Image 1 (tube, one colour):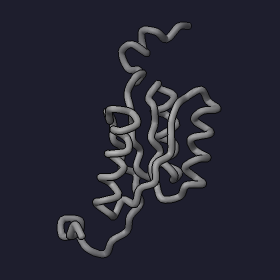
Image 2 (tube, one colour):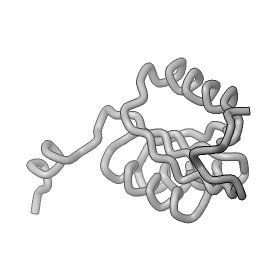
Image 3 (tube, helix red, strand yellow):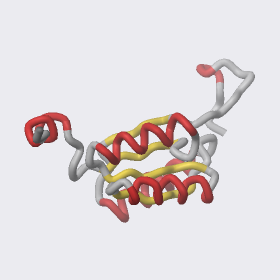
Image 4 (tube, helix red, strand yellow):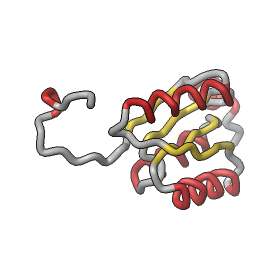
Length: 113
């Protein structure tokens, strides 16, 4: 059965997805799914070894992607991730935040610094 109709409706071909925390289990699975749907996936996280392994798996499955390092608790690092993505891809269509950050401070009270 051909899936051209479904791809036309729901495919992500030509789009760029950034998955912050894409080096983890949940974020990695989401990165795989986005790539399978046709998106170029920027796997972003702190662990380069796991990030490159995820990108290799995406490519082996026929998808496209790259790894970019990011520390999700540092605003400058996040800004750098966006800047590098725009420099290399020209666009950022989808953002998935799966960064695992623990804090004892309630979310609304966490300062930027």
